[in-house]
Image (tube, rainbow, N blue to C red; front, side, top):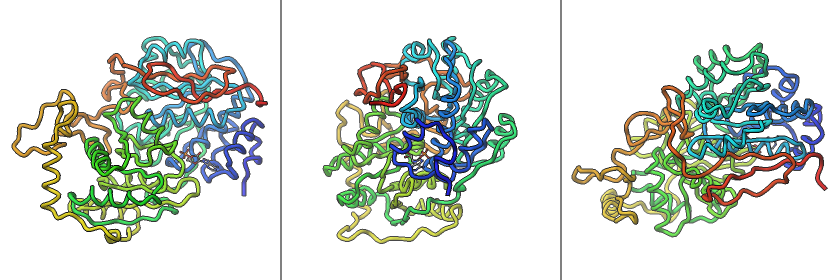
Length: 495
Ligand code: AMP
């Protein structure tokens, strides 16, 4: 079996891997690292959870270590494009971890946060820039960034990038890159439009592939529980009372559905937080940090928000709602059983969702075993559930809003209007706002049509630059409006 030492990776990279406890490369790493180290272009089919980030980060760090040079002002040597903020953060953190014994500057920029600090962070140039496309375009238009000296381009989750409407931004970005460059292209799926994009952007690429999207992670035990909509919350509450469920990701189809589930859990004393497109960046980061450090064991997420979240030891994934896109199911359950651990994915399925279940089973080519209600659980009748839902509807929200109503949104004028009516829906096309049917950008920075950024002044948050020579710092608490450093990289080994 291939070992990391077989690749001839730079010593400081090997040392960081050893410290991270990585014993051997994952299949995508085994295929991708050697050609990427040689400077070859790559076209990789791999989803999050397969170790794909290290598959491109390790050879990139190695190459930078081999050719140390100062980045040009307002430039970067490596550009990594990510469709979402969460994934961008994750990637930047991975670079910091794997490169902790090397000296590189590493910055992540995305929309929805103050741009001026990002401009400052880029002023002297950075080695590695991880960016969402919308904000990247904004920075270029403001002349805070130039792509003329990019040596390596990584396009991560290309399918998601297209789904979110970043195609125009992407095309404009690639046009600004030097022709002479290395390009590494990753996508969980490779439909025709993605393949033709890869064709345009890659030169004689090495093709690497693992886990076709229709294959669900092998080590995930799956089950489905049939429950009517009104019984789902009680069922979830019951399941989560089991302390053996250490860290659980709960998926809902909508943003308001996620908030409702959190409220339902809190009512029975279960601490949970939600992560979705209506949450501010600091809120998302706080929720994610609490989930990662174990202070909050239940994270309720929508598909888009959860994409790319890499949290170790997620013991359970619960599909509170079944996704209407089978691939989303595969992505969701891929959050558990990562890098060799075992996991359990439980899906709740009501009558309307049975068609989704059939699609999922057809796509994954496997039947999901049906489980009964857990011991000691008796579901509320449909009538009881309807009464509870109505009581929830009447409950005054602390800020004067009705449940499910966002600021600036009028209460439903329809008699008996339920919370969540007219709500945004998160499906394959991204997060829609206010049920307008228009996909919004998950990086909060760019518009789908022209790929340019939204110019809203952002309240807080920051570009995160890691200045040369500083020691790694723990993330500061969010919400201060302060810039933050991520993992900083000393030159040479630490004492
Ligand atoms: P990714 O697909 O990049 O999101 O990685 C999924 C998870 O696998 C992350 O938590 C990585 O830290 C972990 N990982 C990546 N490569 C390895 C490896 N070779 N051995 C063990 N864990 C790994």
